[in-house]
Length: 317
Ligand SMILES: [Zn+2]
Ligand SMILES: [Zn+2]
Image (cartoon, rainbow, N blue to C red; front, side, top):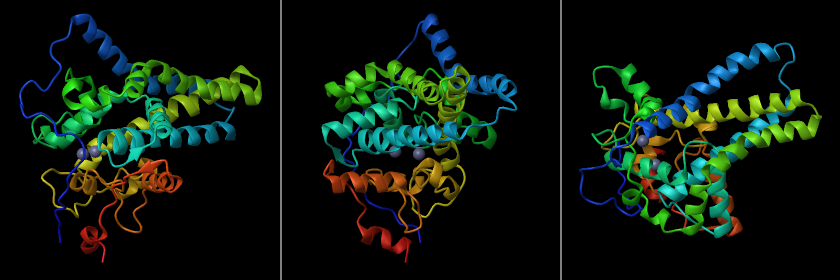
């Protein structure tokens, strides 16, 4: 039985005027720069893989590359899910200053855009969910699921549709720590790739090992996380189950639970955006919620929004 959960997200409500939801015109130079950077991030890893795999063929994948990749995937991924998404976008909990800075830095190292623009885009997604104004709804092409999927997954990144940050993320812009981390985004992106290169070199002492670590634990790790994050926008608004009644088309898509760190329980998330937990049932893996629980026990996270059990009980008898 679908249940609509009444939610009162602590995120400041977006201003009322529905017009001018984008940041305005851009110069032709800025347009070229924007498209070049986006294309490099979206298509670049595929090209790098095409060049690197034949070169490294026969050398195999080293265990140390995979270990570094898994660790960096988990750190940067949870930086996005716990930090950018549940803390900064939805205020699912309050973090002490150290945790706040660590999460903002870890999320920036995922190279999914700067903190403030990420949060502004996502708040706009929730405001318009699958209606005109949603920056990445797959339902903008009602006659073609394929076109809708491509738009929601990567196509929207190429649009000049920058969400006005002063309107959607004023609370972040009022925080000096977050403004500094937001400005340093290019540095965090560089560190995110330099780190595996440096660790690879430190562990093996050869340039080949350093490049191998950069490929697997830098570029491929980053690319996998990008596609998992984008899958929440595409797959989790097209395929899966809808146990909660919401006004959008959000879904729960179980196969992504582990790699998305709990973000795949997207239907619950849209029904109850400020919940620190997205996986409601006992078997709905949500590592992000587990870490928030640990942070709460350590005293680093307070005022955590856990879903009231009586609201979720009818769904999981
Ligand atoms: Zn959504
Ligand atoms: Zn959200």
